[in-house]
Length: 152
Image (cartoon, rainbow, N blue to C red; front, side):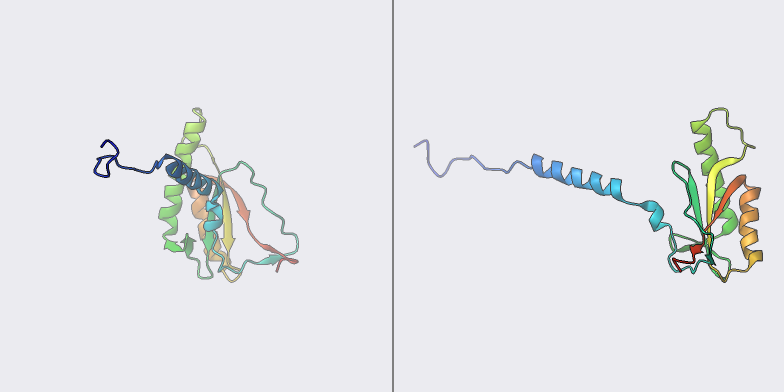
């Protein structure tokens, strides 16, 4: 009785197509996730300026700094020490610049653009501390974010 019910043959499903689909979905979601949008603090009330225009940063390295109304730096919803955070980001920017350009020197200006998103209630002296700290660490390109009159 070769066709008996007692045979040791087992029927296991082929998981290869399902695993392939899962890996393709993971890859898709990794590619479409916008990490820069996650770095924006949407609780900030940006100042309204009639001449505000979109920031043109295609292909540039950006560092987004969210400054609340009391001058605290918020990164991904966590309050950070301004000097320590900017110093760490400057070090990372230097390493990236050195990797991309072997002729980059330690005292060269960093290629990263600082995007300052400050609440409209932030006093200028607190905003100036952030900008001065960035400049002391080698950052020279800045963009201040504001709302256009039509957007406000």
